[in-house]
Image (cartoon, rainbow, N blue to C red; front, side):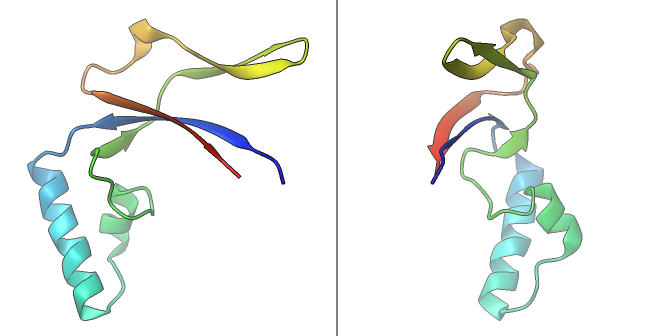
Length: 89
């Protein structure tokens, strides 16, 4: 089993996020499919309390026996307030 490292940026929840989350919750409560527009808004994943996922300007980085990512701090969109670093197996 291999490990993957991920870096995800989030813009805080706003009014639109709250409306989309309400639709998501209503669909789950009614046991009906979530509309494509709502699923797409949340990146086809369950809504995250951290907010809306924002693509970050990552570059892969490699050196002898090391690998990771570089994040250009100056290129991070201003509305991103949370950056999550996580590993998955």
